[in-house]
Image (cartoon, rainbow, N blue to C red):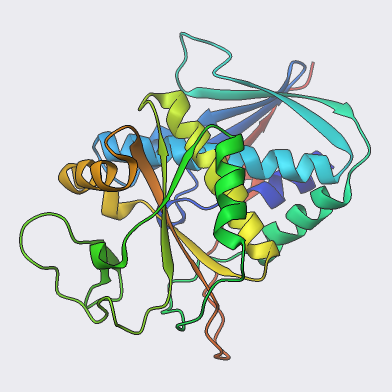
Length: 274
């Protein structure tokens, strides 16, 4: 059962599918560790991405455990002298609820969809629902104004804060009908980044369960000036942007978002028997 849970949790989003985490199973429980060697950038932004990814896989794991009938009790950063030890799971049997199965099913169907989304309004109450989910986890939620982002010539999303105008194929009246969301935290410590990753996971799964397409983004926040400007505009300077989410209606095309190879359970998990 635990192998199946960890295999499902491995579908959590991470920049460039880096999967910067390791699992350890021993007599004390299930441990989640950061794998700093798999950071995609040699900077503070790369470290932030690792922690957000670890938060996302932490939440995916908790969802998968709950669907299997186990209530996870999670201790975050259980060893203060080891910042790479992200979490310790202890579990007790508890009947799964319908909502647990719905979110676990969303793990298998969620994909990072980088295509342009059609111009279509989100179902009524969608943004409010996602905002409530974020607030329950102590994470700030905001919609980024459409004038502040664009898809560049490579189809990648870029923020429009620093320097001159960013060239792109879609402006305020362009073809991309996505809504861009920002998740922020009052602090910018490692626990804040992990919490942001957990919330990211939950919102992506909730959006998938609602039949929406989505994609998590951190690259646009690697520019510190853009990150600061975004925080000032959408959070009044009182929260640090941690991750962005594009959400919208999936294009009516036969081509589904591409899937990426994932590391095997043997590559990410150590089993210690006592």
